[in-house]
Image (cartoon, rainbow, N blue to C red; front, side, top):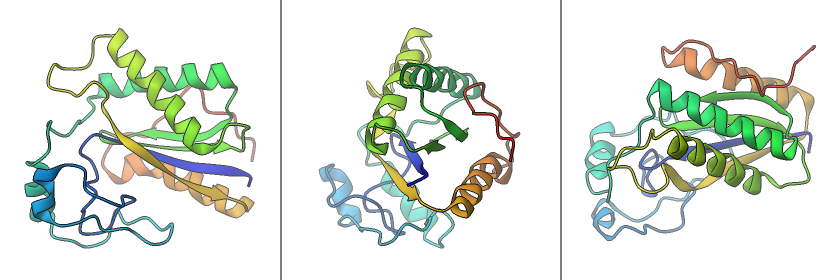
Length: 189
């Protein structure tokens, strides 16, 4: 493995019974069960742009215990400062990162910590910064993040470059400005 492509989401972004599929094996929230069982996604391809019934998904989110978390620009910058803390603490080499209103993408060079642990480290430090800067509302759960995250192992240089481009273009595709973060490793190639 050269690098890992990690994604973690805010609470309420991607439900376990999303009609496009998810990484979940079961639905924990009993009220959400009325919208169906978990739909396990197969493969590593992104399902974000797969067609589905958007109204169904929005209605299902009304069954959540808390409102879905949507990060403001100020909160996203605090998340970036938290990720920067994690990068400094463990010397991760981050090749690309974008912090979207409801999820985070990052490409991290292979490290002694497995991707699952890196995701946990990023989420912990980001939450710490949000709390320290008093940027979590009373309606937000104790953590703004969904329980798990996703990671894809990148074992070819071409796959790493494609993933970097995808992450860098993600905000632009959603009508947001390009993102630059101080913790991104300089890329001479």
